[in-house]
Every structure is written in C-alpha cells, then in structure tokens.
Image (cartoon, helix red, strand yellow):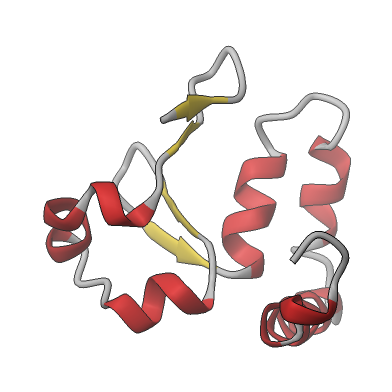
Length: 94
C-alpha cells in the first residue's frame, strides 16, 4: 500500500483486496482493464475519471483535472485512456 498525498490517496494492488473488489462489484476483468478510484463517499470511478480524480489531490496537477469536465474533452480523455490501456504493452517499461 502506498500513500501519495497529505490527503491520503492510498494505492493498493488489486490482488491484495479481494473482499474490497467484491464489495464494489469489480471483477478480475475490471481491474485488469483499467485503474479504479473509490472516493470517500464510496463512489467508484474507473479509467480517465479515476485518473482525473487522482489529479485533484496533486496541487500542481489540479488544473488538469478540471479539463475533464469541459465540453468535448470528457469523451476525448475517455477514448485516450481506453486506447492507452489497450496498448500499454507497447509503452516503455512494460
């Protein structure tokens, strides 16, 4: 488990929390296909929405998170996230 900010973003590998996955109805395919963010209100966000939620906790990246809510950018970011997730094996370090 890893904490990234003073506001306590906790990064947890999916295979260490099977009970939490079941609680939020996340399957193995779900967690292998995209990143997930669970808010303190227990709202479950996946993909680009999850990444943008994380950006809100990093002071210098916060303005980037608000771009997600601009007209036209939401679908573009979702598409870019899905494309990069399905092609991550082509990226450096994979």
